[in-house]
Length: 261
Image (cartoon, rainbow, N blue to C red; front, side):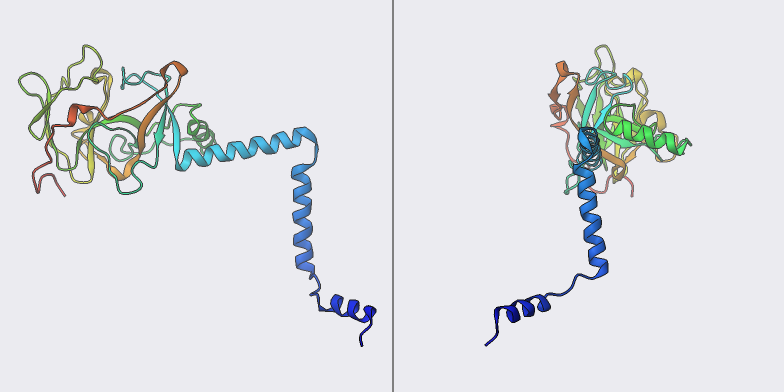
C-alpha cells in the first residue's frame, strides 16, 4: 500500500514542469497587468484615455465616422461647421447608393486627378483629428447628393428649369432658397458603376457638372463612396436624422443597356 508521502510525491512528479519560455511569458503577463492596474490614478486615467481613443478610432474607421462640413455647398441641408455622422455600413451588405442619398466619397480620380502631396506626419495627425470630427476632412473627401446612378440619363433642364432623370422632371425642394437646379446645361448618361452627384447649394457647389471635360466625365465610382450621411450630430440644436427625399420617387429605372461599360 502506498503511503500518503508516496502519493504526494507521485502527484508532484506527474505535473509537467513549467518550461523557461512559459515561465517568461507568464511573468511578462503579470508584469503587464501590474503596470496597467498599478501606478496610481494618473496612469490608470492615461490607460483609460488611450483605450477610449483607440475605440473611437476603430468605430470611426469601420462603423460611423463624424464628418465636419467644410463649406456651404450643401446648404441649407447642412451648414458649415455642422458635424454629420457617416454610416460606413450602409452599402457594405449588398445595398448601393440611391438617388437622393447624401454621400461622402473620395474624389481622387474623379474630382481630383492627383492626390495632393503633404507631410506624412501632418497628414496622419490631421487624418486622426478628421476621423473624430475635430478637423476638416482631407482635400480629396467630398459630400454631395446622388442625382443619378449608373445607366441614368440626367439632363438640365426642362421648360420649367427642372433637372430630368430618365425623362422624369425632379422637383428638388431641398435646394438652397433662390437657387436654380443648374445654370450650366448638360445632358449625360451615367456610366454603370458610377454616380452623378451635385450639391444642394447649386451656385456654391463644385460638383459633377464642373468635371464634365475631365477623365471620368464628372461621375464618381461607387467603390469610392465612404458612406451615407444618416444624421446631424452637432450642434445640439440641429440634431436630426437625414432621410432620402421623395423627389426621386417617380423616376423610372434606366432603359436596358443604357449607360456605358
